[in-house]
Image: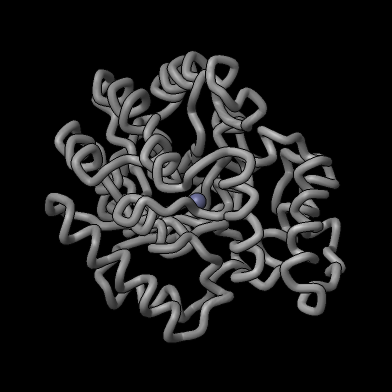
Length: 317
Ligand SMILES: [Zn+2]
């Protein structure tokens, strides 16, 4: 028996009233569910800031209750428009991770184009259009890869096996340049111009500064949202240095800078990325490995809980 408390970091992506958007098939949490969940979490936990969460992990802060930190990936516009005001009203300090190329260059992360294309066309039609496009662009380069279905469904537990296999292949199993060219062409054909869509999807620097003023913390989520383990040492350094520089050039100073690994399973990054983040002054980093965290837990491998399971007690916690 022990009296140690835990830190539960909850992970959110899209938080929007999907039925009332042009993409009702997108996967995300409706705003009323979010409001309700925040109220419940505030009752069950002490709501942490990034500072108190970090002090807990290093042993400098001994809370009387379990801690809960709310984290939001990808720097989406609804995080500024809808989520931050709800948190500010309750004096909760969320952490929001920005993809700096999306904010700075109006670029869409291919993984987001993938979500919107799938929502617009339906999975079957999209997968067919995507593979046709890839084969047309590069008949030799493309060979269907044998994706381990178990690995795929543990990475994407909320999707059907077919969708999970496709997403796994898309995000980890293909030559990224070819994949990105194919998805960009399909996006402009079926949805529209990338820069304009990026404007409506991601926060601006000014909006991110307003979030900081409202008590929110901003963190890095890379420059280009690529799985870090797939980058060469040079590409890795360039990506993380660019992300770090743009955050510091465009945002207000913060006591703690933190980071979230894109994709975030432990095989999506390695020690070289951790060392580089430490060298750049990031104090901790969040994975997507499902775990609660304790005093002394690895600060560069903070576990998170998907928002669908935010209130489910974990074994042993
Ligand atoms: Zn992301």
